Image (cartoon, rainbow, N blue to C red; front, top):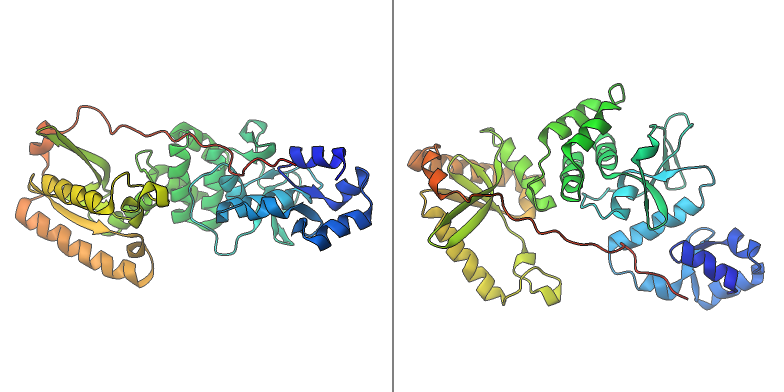
Length: 350
């Protein structure tokens, strides 16, 4: 590689097109030689990266972002990344597409077109809705989440909107983005998402849990309900009457050094959770525990039946009024843990 190609790849996150490389002084046979030797790989037809860099990517999201960036380099017309492509670039926690593709917003086209794995979207956007992320233009958090709602439906949109609020967007941002969609297709889905979103969920699983508990038919649960007494404070994921719904994950037991969330040995984490549940149920409440598999398919139907029985049992034993718990409520909201994220892709260096 000559210096001009290195400069291009540095500016484009480790990517370069065949045309760019040749315009920068490389001969076609030099490019082909790098590909045959395995030094370069084709991320997309006519878009290349060093194999060592591609092999260093460890997550599906990283590989998807690289593929989206490569696709963007092949779109000559002015455009921005949108929908899931924008969400992944900005590290929004979203539900994956069944068939991942690259999404771009393009002013001036008629309708939406899918070409070679890239979907070109008509929907107009304002200049202030465009953000520059690692050198690539994308639609902002609020607009991205509502585009996902229109493209993939309520649940996908709700997850994206909750994630956008966690990442710094506001309800006002969502309302302003939704207002511009008044006469667009599927705007009713957008309205439902904006009305239902909450800034209090800590994860995708908690958003799915809130939707799940709402489906029981006894009201919308309150997220992050805290109880404090005797020097202990516990925050419960979801409350409906005097019944709590807790979202469990193996990540909570897996040590941090192994990619989990626990800073203690698994048995200590499990023991702490047992003591925590004893504390919570000591206030004459009930608890249902949910996992990811309870939110989808046949597992959802079974879990809904179980949770309905458990909720109604709590109601029969303790009622639904929680006014007696007011004296045990924490004075402020649950402390939020702000996670500082670096770029989604590692920096490329020659």
